[in-house]
Amino acid sequence: MNTQDKAAHWSNHSVKCHDCGLKKQCFPNTLSQQETLALENIVTSHYGYQRNDYLYHAGDFLNKLVIIKSGSAKTELVSEYGAEQLVGFHFSGDLLGLDCTSHKRTLTSVVFLENASVCTIPYQAFNVLSEQIPQLHYEMMRRLHDEVSMSQQLILAMNNHSAEQRVVIFLQDLARRQYRRGLSKDNLHLSMSRADIANYLGLASATVSRIISKFERDGLLAVENRHLQLTNYQALMNTVQACA
Amino acid sequence: MNTQDKAAHWSNHSVKCHDCGLKKQCFPNTLSQQETLALENIVTSHYGYQRNDYLYHAGDFLNKLVIIKSGSAKTELVSEYGAEQLVGFHFSGDLLGLDCTSHKRTLTSVVFLENASVCTIPYQAFNVLSEQIPQLHYEMMRRLHDEVSMSQQLILAMNNHSAEQRVVIFLQDLARRQYRRGLSKDNLHLSMSRADIANYLGLASATVSRIISKFERDGLLAVENRHLQLTNYQALMNTVQACA
DNA sequence: CGCTGTTTTGACAATTATCAACATAGGTGG
DNA sequence: CCACCTATGTTGATAATTGTCAAAACAGCG
Figure 1 (cartoon, rainbow over the protein chains, first blue to last red):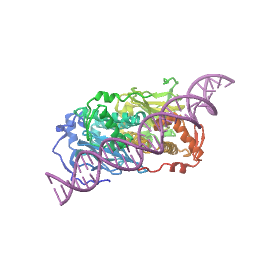
Figure 2: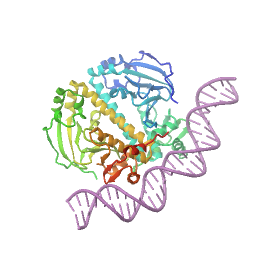
Figure 3: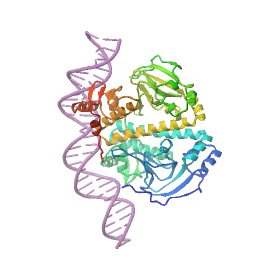
Figure 4: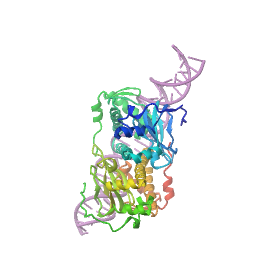
């Protein structure tokens, strides 16, 4: 069930932060040019991750921050009773590994959903740099709080919306994040399985299938396996309404 | 429905951190004696909060950190569709207001569940102090990450456990936190309503009532209004089992 | 002591899970 | 390049959990 890290990962320093296409969404977005140069000295790139590879396992001594450069991943949490719960999906520009800032060991595992590459920043070196660039502290706080906020939004969605509405909210989130990365809002490639979506939303995978099929029947989107064309974006979003 | 801050709150500096009964659970727990003295210079106490008073509203420019000194509170999140979702309960020693570290405005509201008092730390002054005491930065990170973790645990509980199990998990959480504050594990005073518990757990309040009644019939606990005696703690906890 | 808000309990309905069968896709080896 | 094999996805029939609505009991407060 759980694959080990079997990919041949390798590192280089060839692509520098100031030259990276993601710098607008990454740390450098709040740093001066000089500070960016300081940052890129401690950054390493890693290529060659594949589907089902683990970026890290719950319990690892992860002593670095990780930024997804390309590809996507999911975060999973395993309960003391053995239940597995997905608590997040991640795409290029997303920051992972904040676990290790406060606890020595990670509490969650991160698994890639497709071929991927990342940048890593040794946490020690990052801390040293943060002493010189206080901005980095605030950036970390902001990212951490964004995680709190996203989890709370998920709780809200699950407790106050029907299965159908949850799926729409999920698609809306994907679309918005994709849009922020400069891509189309209504053309979604799902890198995660229906089962992943279902687990994340607290539904059965059969339910997710049925709902997506229904949306297609209703002319709100076109399905072709894991590719969704949101042909009627606004109407789809309108199916989420207030509920006392 | 939403009461304004109508309580006559007043401040003093009489109780200093180094003399406070909560110092073991509060910031000072990682600080030296000297650092604690520096911290207490920027701390203010506020008394006189009452049930249903707001500590702050979503959207406020909250420029301070707050520590609950006595009493309890709940955090609520309101969706863009108007749904209200409780995302946390708070007791003495808990830190609130982390919202304001990254965003100018708070994203949630905090409402007291009973008479309460708090300490506040102006965020500006706290930041200045953090420059001198790096330990404070890590403490903040740890607290923020604890919030992430708690939200994720809640998601896990809701998606993988029945209504009955969710209630047990909730009681377990209360008991553990109360135990950590030096109180009994099996003697719970619920400061929140059944409706609050239900909202938090994603259930109907009638369901929570029914479940607690059933536990009483089964001899697992004794109910007297909002006071629960967990007469058979272990058996109660055992009702939460693994689920594939 | 009455009023208001909370809790309990019942009867019923509805959403969604479960189980199972079938269909499809993507990857692998002949 | 095709055929197989395993993963994943779809759809149907059925069952079960939990929500909804409402009425009655209860508690706390002025």
